[in-house]
Length: 389
Image 1 (spheres, rainbow, N blue to C red):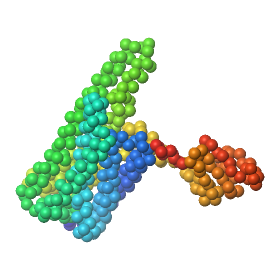
Image 2 (tube, rainbow, N blue to C red):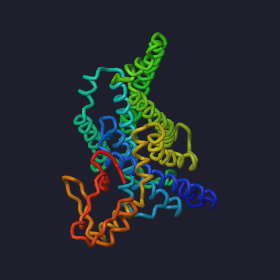
Image 3 (cartoon, rainbow, N blue to C red):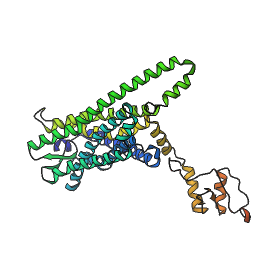
Image 4 (cartoon, rainbow, N blue to C red):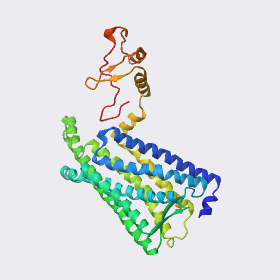
């Protein structure tokens, strides 16, 4: 297998490396954008979005620590980073795999509770405090499950040329069977079953709601606007909640499309008596699908979640010229800002051009009575709840 990695043709190497670099760049940009949106806009820090943030963080870890190293292996045809980095690479790869799958299951349970159970039960099960504690427990549990067997000598981490990455190696057949029995149940079958069950219930509830809404609107054709407002005002079935459920379903569906083949490839490779020797390009497909899974989620948020889409637009379409103007005023005009009135005072002749840029009249600066000008309604500092430029 190592010879197969080093003896690839130039065209195959270029395709593999280019694909992984593209996925890496998109994953970095998308997940940083997601985390930045949640950081700058407090309204995005809801209980449901906590799971989106956790997923984006695990994907960002993959984009920073895993994908660049795999790209280097595909370029060089061998592992060139040393044993210590190999140990870290194997640990982080398993950690992100297990955490991501369970987080997907928790997202599905969150949507099911929100849409199909009472508000009281939802707030009881998915308060901000409990959601934080649950995610912290999940990350600590997964880290311990991966790390303890390695520390006590039941496993080791080695380079796997087929994956172009480091992975776990089992020191006994019994240990391998026990490990994958636990892993498949906890980190694959249980989240997938919970996801299918929960979203089937959510889809059924949304269909019933839409049918009821249509019938109500037809019966009240003379008061259609009032009826629509009453229906959309329900907390469970507001347009926001329905759109959020649809976007998260798309995230989970895309996740399953990527991860079901990955698990199949991993299990078939770990138990070669089932299919015999697996081709290298099939094994590498698992690494490519892993990168795709870490990349697509932010684009689904941007496409289907209006709250994230608005915040993404604010960040990407920031008015650079205003930032430069404020920086110029701060450096040259000794810009000061009072907390109470949020007035902006300019005490330098160099600030006249900035005032004219914003269409503000500029009296004679040499007059003692006009050394400080108040510019109300012009705010250069961002508010606390959302991003501005």
